[in-house]
Amino acid sequence: MTGPQSYDEASGGSIVDQIDRYRELADRDVMARSIATLKARGTYEPNEYVNEAKLPPLTVAEHLETLALGERIARYYRHPSQVDHAVKAGASWAQIAAATGTTEDASRAAYREWAQGQHKYAGMDDDEYAAALERAGDTDAGGAR
Image 1 (cartoon, rainbow, N blue to C red):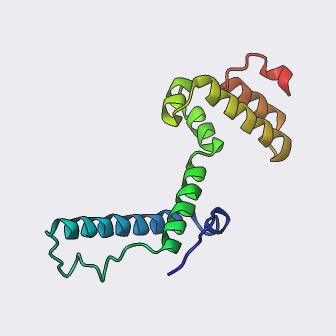
Image 2 (image 1 turned 135 degrees about the horizontal axis):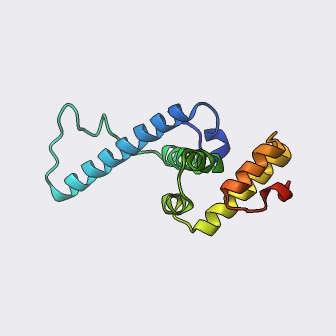
């Protein structure tokens, strides 16, 4: 089976299906690499569940598919809307920074930029925008509309 080999191609369909396909490819890749390691050591003993016929190495197309799906999944989960959900749930900026591997200032700045885009282009109204800026720690959120 040849699946999506670019980020744009991988963006179609549901994130659940994309995760399932990524896991399928990643699991097979690990098993195929394990078989290769065991063969190199001379300790490989195929059985009905673990064998080269059922678990062949990934093709070039499948490696590209894995890369494309991995990027798609990563972008989905690191989308700033996920930060919005966490902030609204009560997460601190220190917790968000730790979870995203960045600084509090960088997290807040990315959140502000996202909120500005939502306000300008995606229908976030003035009150919602002011509330987002307040969550980001802007003390003059009312004047930033």
